[in-house]
Picture 1 (cartoon, helix red, strand yellow):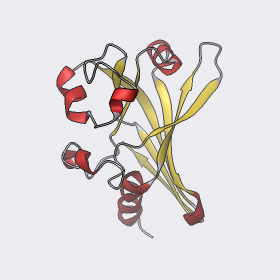
Picture 2 (cartoon, rainbow, N blue to C red):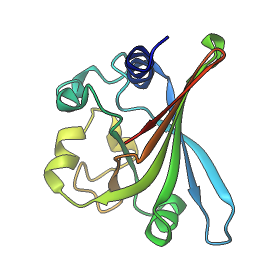
Picture 3 (spheres, helix red, strand yellow):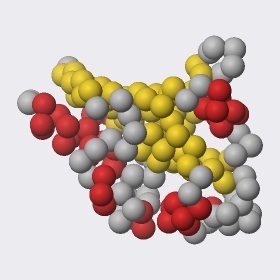
Picture 4 (cartoon, rainbow, N blue to C red):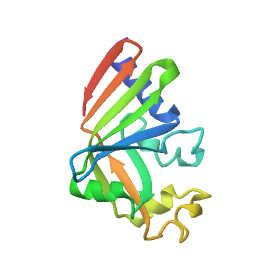
Length: 153
């Protein structure tokens, strides 16, 4: 498999993995890992396909979370994170590394908003406890069975 084929498969993995595993660094210096919605997963979030239309060839990752969550405090103190997408039964994984950005643009919150999210953010997309996170990674590492590829971004 060449580098271009690996990149296509890695980007496909971002659109099919059930969850994104996000790791931040707690103030004590220890990694803290949690599963988050994979908003690029077309099967689960078909309404967001147009939101990601301009990012079909890059590793841009976006998340929503509670402003009050520990991960927001971690990112404010140290924005370095890793995000992992995987399909274990296929022995495929993609790890993205870089600095996570807290997005303040209210129009982005509106564009991402999904029906049912009121359970997390009762006041809707502009709920003060609704935050959008964006990762434009500096590095991507793709694993496919016994193959390993690195993309410096």
